[in-house]
Length: 473
Image (cartoon, rainbow, N blue to C red; front, side, top):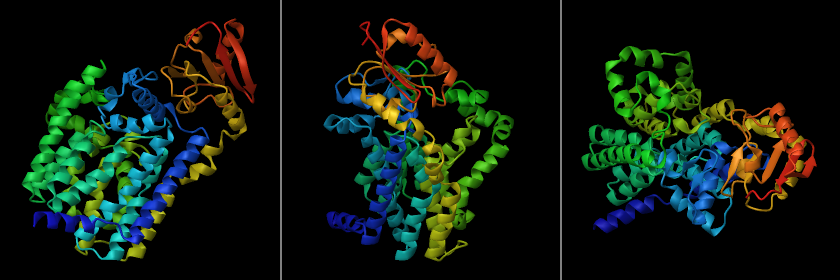
């Protein structure tokens, strides 16, 4: 009888033709967009290069250490999900695997979003409208363009875990939670908070206890065992909360003991603006009486509001991703209770489309992403001349095109470059990249020309490629 119930539940999760169409079209658009951006040389060392290189090394049985930041792949954010992802690189090493995984993960979010809406009793057209609103939420498209981040894999898993908990399917719930935890250390706090919400508001003590305990245990292992072992700096990002303390326990304690500091950090105009853009795309359905799911979003929202880092307060970077699933749950509950400004599916989609047009980064394909066309062909030719896996020094935007090697580093104004450590020097004086300047590049070009070890093997449109003939690998 239990197996029959499971089968019946899983049958309801099979996508309808309309839903499947949404999924396929959105995945294709996401993949095409990120591929085009990469092809126009606007991907970056941070974060695409620092993930692509260790994955390549891992697939070749080598230590998965990013030479760009000098950190083991597990020392970044304890994301063990990279180990199964390396299997794709074992089949065929190509950075486009990451674009495909990201595009598919983000598109797959429509399935649990739709089925959570149906589970809540919404009509077919309303459920499809909610799924469309998810796809048009500006963060989804914007994040797809921002290189690659493993937490995108967790997005559909968190939504699915909620559906499975409500459907009383324990095994699937546990699997979703475990895999989601492996996508980033900070997600452990989101999962633990989701456990609290499941216990207190959803009245599902078993599922909530599993999420709560799993989240706290993994957070401890990640921050006290894995990260300190793989890098001396320990937990990345603590410096952003230095006013509250220098360690996780100290910060947690001062959140209670120093309310004046907390209020001063939270009550800012930048935070107000962030909350506005975070809520506007779904504002039509965020009824306060249905805010209970936002309990699970509190840890990530608090980190964003308390941070000194402005990139945590926008819809471009990955930091708002763990908040979105629970905002969608609020919208679904509000719509199911007829407690929203908007009820009609077409109006919901129209609102979402307007928000996407206003806050989405789609316009960059007609502006910023065309800025390097004057050296595009020369850059492609220079990259084609890099025929071995020897060490490379290159602009940040070109490192993801050349990161399948043990050593690659970025031309930067903050780095003291020793040219003799590299076999290839790939430099672009016209478009040096955000981390460099034309003056720095010109100085490196002149140094290479004066160094008898370096031979100029390619030059066109202010793009230079030098090779070291003195035995450096």
